[in-house]
Length: 437
Image 1 (cartoon, rainbow, N blue to C red):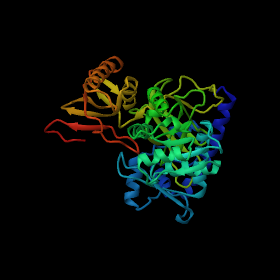
Image 2: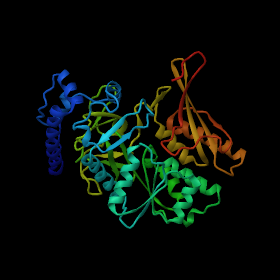
Image 3: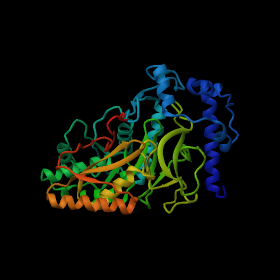
């Protein structure tokens, strides 16, 4: 690469990669056995050599390994006594995974969260409210611990109803709210229904993850309006790899990958060839510092857009810039009458149209064809005729934006489910005689 900064980054990544691969070949049974079966030498000449020779790790590899070697599998580089944290995936795309971390790996991830906070302008003077129940999911705990290390006053919201959380946010004058985009909208909806005026809120920043909404302009605008001008800051991560990216301070719809800690590739989903500039592909990650439970060339399933060119961003960062953030997942995209449809695109049209409190998208298999219909729940106080008018506007917007005729149905306010965790608005059904997926 022509830039000195990018060349320096490559040298750093190569050095970390060589050390990691050598360690795993010696001490990690999962990778030692995989590489031995593939006849792969643990020597890494450079990044190109690594990408050409080392195989991908897929989630089903990890699931199978843990099933064969319960309860934690063999992707452990150190003796079990070295590990102090256990977390797990949601199981939304298959059997849940258990993931162990050493104190060093845990701190490695907290450092990434600190980068997320600092990019969002969060300081030790902030009061951070965590609007979720603290279950086994890694992101909750790393966010909390990192904010504590930053010196923030940390306000846990586990075990509370949504209304109790709203009141706690106002009573304790929280300045930062952490949750999913969907749940931040739901909290605002609950406040409106209960007559709680969010103009009294001290929240100035909303940190979101878990869904594409944080990088969708229409969703961001709706959140910022609902929370009286608070700014939205997106990021993303996974239990398997940790916190990966932070929102660009200059370009809200861009996520920067923390490349000093992750070797990132963007590959075409079916061929696994590198995508061209501006093309959409799957994000492949190698964790360079999570030595206790590492991942080598992990197929994340996240779809992102490759940058047109590498260079220094307006914010001063040389980190890989993902325009639009996480666009969707490889297992979420559907092809409707020859058109690739991403959930994020549907969400953006709905949020831009307005008047919708919640929605559900149903993909129906009709023989060899897939059909899509959307069910909407109008916002509180909208008359029936106005809700029907909203549905027609949505159908027109889908036709314009996606070149698809998508029927939109209206249901009563309060009839669709609400989500504290990742929203599961997309369902798949089959016509009679077929098996539902």
